[in-house]
Amino acid sequence: MKNTREKIISAAVSVWNEDYGAPLKYIARDAGISRMTLHRHFCGRDAILLAITDEFVERIVKVLDDAMNEAQQPVQQMEYLVKNTHLLGEDYNFLFDLFEQKGRPDDLVERFTFFEEKFAAFFDNLIAQGVVKPGVNAKWANALLEGMMKSAFRMRQRGWESDSNLENLLWDAYQSAIFEPQALQDARAAS
Image (cartoon, rainbow, N blue to C red; front, side, top):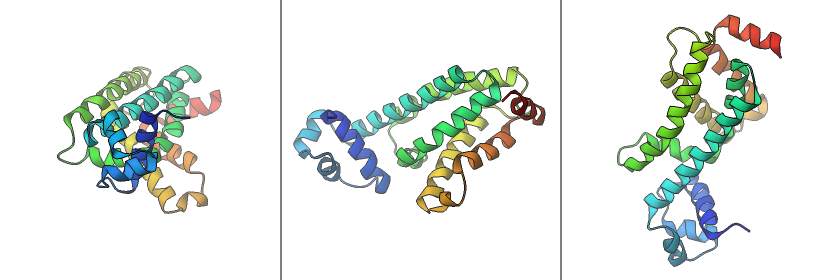
């Protein structure tokens, strides 16, 4: 059984994906606890939000680490990352919306910095290998990755993903925006 803190975080993700303005009592209800118990673990909304952000960053960093360890070829590493992060967009969709709003906690931005720096180092390595289109930098590639996660969420939310293989559609769009055609041919030949 999950501990209480994990139940609160899980309930908050579920509730806030539906309505970020929902009161904490809805989170407590979904977690099967009282508001008093919720407040013993978290001092308020921002504390819960930051815990969720930490969990998201931990999960996406793990996917990036796995991508670097699972595949040898740079295009295949990025493919692994794209195909295995799009589901995080569904679990943490409200974070993407919040990140763009004024009034968000400053700590929210700082927590994402760890992933952004790790992604930038990974992507700069791809650039150094000569597989990335000229003019494409890590910031653009990261923003595009976030956009892909958001797009996947919208597709599933509207029920459109059943018409196609969403994972492959996302990868096709991403790879054509980022990689040199020769790098894609080399990756296909290597697989």
